[in-house]
Image: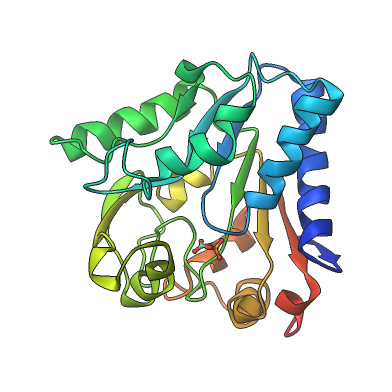
Length: 241
Ligand code: PGA
């Protein structure tokens, strides 16, 4: 794993966006794996700036998102589809049909998951996969005690995740209890994984991910086996490394 230490959130966002913008410029038909949460918002702002001020062209880019709450439709303001529209897609020139987020309202979960994996495979995997990390070491919604060989699947959210995400909802009781998530196997199809982290609350998970044993209790630890992972983190998140 290659680690890039940043002074602050703005630097982390700029450095990450610069890598993604370079890929979009070099490979206009690239496939971007995208993430939600607080961490990548600054990166998306920078990408919007590249588009508006420096003509970065997203018209041939395809995106696949990591996950979606189960039970939330695209109109729900806390759905990840809605998050992506608000924070990125509505501000760049990507064709809507090129953007993919798992269907949180599906009645046929097994089929939706299989189709999502087929989609990613048909695209040849992602060129860059952006991921955050949970305080509990989750990647996307691959929670502790994860099955490393899983493809896209339905998961029960960990209590820690429900608590951490309650800040986006009116109350903790409103946080969905399940989600559809790409599994670690699906995530591993990425040619390059960029893991972003900004908070001191992530320091323990980051240290275990980089230095600890590969352990299903710390899902991110499996990234040690991926050949091309770059951690771009604010120095507080690297305090224990
Ligand atoms: P955050 O979430 O970016 O809001 O910290 C990351 C995650 O839980 O994967």
